[in-house]
Picture 1 (tube, one colour):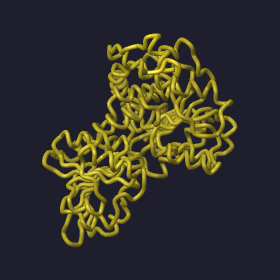
Picture 2 (cartoon, rainbow, N blue to C red):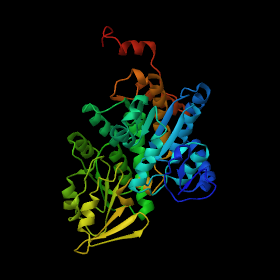
Picture 3 (cartoon, rainbow, N blue to C red):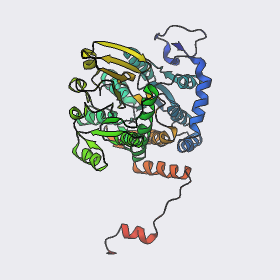
Picture 4 (cartoon, rainbow, N blue to C red):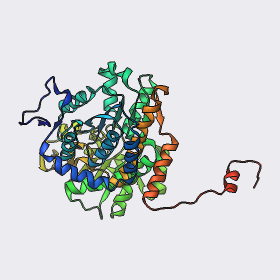
Length: 436
């Protein structure tokens, strides 16, 4: 690994004077990264319009931002939009396998602080986060709440400078709401994940498509005629189940929440426990945000050559230590596919180390979907910059005016005109005197 502004290549390490430098895998990839960033930009018209607004108004001048996100082409367009608004930014990865090294190199070549490379081990992952926090942020952007957790656990001296944060994913929002309930949250956070223009589109259409893409890239799996077990029926689970069925699979949904389980049944899926589904599945995919969704008791029931994948944020949804413990042999048989041989001769295949399959083995969500998610992020950062000191230390929904603005901008970019209420209709909806 090399520092972007070193003329010679040196081994990866963190000397004390790294504050003004970036750590990326290969600086020579910057040109290729710029081309891919530009390709994505053309498919992100909402974020582009916000970037142009930011360039004119400079609403983030003097604001320092630490972004712990998946370092992809779509994220790069968010980062450059924030920079156009005047922000100083440090970027670090929110997953060891999701960084696109050419994108990291391109952002570093622009002079941003970038501490991210694909294949970080656990120590390097947290070292990169530590170096990003040297920027002393006013705003944190997270996908999984790791930066917020680190600030609260080991860098509480940073709390007075922080106006607020944004959280991009369901798993992170769950963690932050738990912190708020415990009175442990030290600054306000906006749950960008829960904006309708994020959750209903990014989580459903983005995760649905990109999860299929990652599985097919890793295995060339044929969905048609196979039985696919989907762990979780939130928006991500809905999206993947819909895509798997559309490709000809028989889909089983495993869900713990009665209302979601009922919805899955009404949507035409088989619904059952993981123990009942375990002998039936050819492919198992977890999308819950919880721990040990698939456990040893399930591994022992699975058929020979069953495939295991995760599209939840952390690699804890499949109990990998239990799988390692019961396997008699482990071997990587091709990139992103590890074979675990059982004592009875059965083989189970784990994809991408149980990490996010859609980013570890594919490109992640398409830019057209991330356009809305990152437009929400950009506008939420502006909101925090303007309102942060007036907010309490709790988890906030994205202001509805931001959510609606993003939807309106997306419709306009798609050339779609919607109906408008007449004055009479508006009065009827807001009055009890007009009767029926």
